[in-house]
Image 1 (cartoon, rainbow, N blue to C red):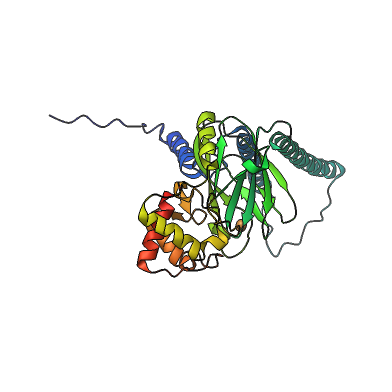
Image 2 (cartoon, rainbow, N blue to C red):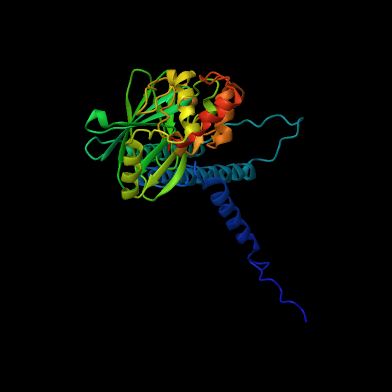
Length: 354
Ligand code: CUA
């Protein structure tokens, strides 16, 4: 018995339109969707920007088609080429032709001007929609760009209750968050394409940006201004939680580190203080209070190491500690030569920092 033919998505007559639709779909799914795409918006501000982008694409495509059509028409209407030995005809437009040409140029300039003014007006509206208004933000976060990582501080009305973390930005779903942006060294640019447009972080100045995610999810932010050797590898994770989960996350993040009970981890805590780690890093609840590198109080609960370049596993932590320069050349973390037992103890300690 013959097996039934597989269902065909299209017949011969409909193939062309299916191909076109398929190409658009492939572009939409493959090129536009994803955790770092301005065309896959996860909140109202990014949605306004994406709509503006699609509108500009549509207007640009229409203008392009119109220009090509006029171009083809001009070629079709052009007089037959003159043989080389034929002298040029005495030219000179009559008045009617000259007026028609002037009118055509005028209409062309007018239409181009209208299109540009229309696009500009829409862009001004989008900018107004996405701008930060101080009264409506419910939560405040400060992000400081460093070569080449992100310091993220969750602000509280009481300064002693600020919570500092790194390379991850956690947000409550459905609540606008005002992000205050500063730079610790050179100019960086803060960009979470799925949630908002980008804005520069400039030394000596504070810029603000509103973020609002309307669904839970995880996205990728990226530095968008060349800031030195590792600019391309200066990423961060953005995680939007339902409000209750966000509150729980924040409460957990606010806690100081729990002193390890296990003997290996306790030895590791001593290594952390004895080796150079504590000069640059803070672990809240311990004497380690360095402020040059990321706060490590809950480092083991983060998604990645070194601003998005490595999975946060014990093995990668070990490799990073021993030789960060081979993984991220130019990073400000120096190598830490440790003997095997010291490294094992240190890694056991870091694993407790959840
Ligand atoms: Cu920071 Cu580019």
